[in-house]
Length: 338
Ligand code: SF4
Image (cartoon, rainbow, N blue to C red):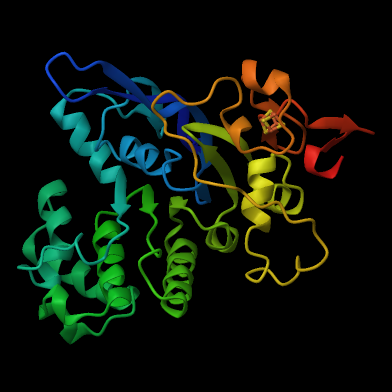
């Protein structure tokens, strides 16, 4: 049987929390952390989820990794539901999906030696014997660029970048189909970030890995990802292939993120109108009506405050949720460019 090209399907994913305000009679408030998110990830590709802090990207990652129960929608990995209840099925699902965490300092058990940290998922999720596990640990240590003798050391004996390499080795130990990378380089220096991204790229090529890559940094996503979704206050505002989204950002929010720091992208310096975002995103508790972005969007009009724009297909695989992206001569044009 041939495998489908799509490894991960996310449909209408919602994660809503209820918060009770202080006091016995405190009112309940609903947090719309993730609100109807859909995307597909192709086998062997890297998919980016981007946005500012509080946009719902890390909550999406936790729901994908089964570390948080969605309140609605579907997640299918290899066509199988990841919200199944049977223990046996969940064990299979865990094997197919591993996570690399943001903080290489707190995500490794400080009392365990590196060889035990990397061996743990194999002991928990496979029937490999001790010899097979030890061989695999040696192979992974080498693959992530550490020295063989370092396997007996403890996490505190490594730098931040090396600890993230250990986290990567642990995630790859059980040959996962999908690796969820939650801001894996944001705690590292820029030079070390580049090394870790290059390592992730190289491992992807060698092992045919599929990544979902969560980041607030579009430059990082541009280097690694084939396609992406841009999230704002729990919703996807734009999605598409890397080449389309980076060469013709259509949603004013994507445009603002891309032009926020022109020094990072010297090719854009001077030639592109800069859109600066004022203030922080509003709270996902009682988010703004209509288009959630209207409180910060310089192009907002009355309809933006009352009607929520749907994510619509504008061609070449690009989708955008903005009332004022217009089709001109068959091409979508952003309100920023009109
Ligand atoms: Fe701005 Fe309106 Fe478009 Fe939202 S729908 S991004 S508020 S122009």
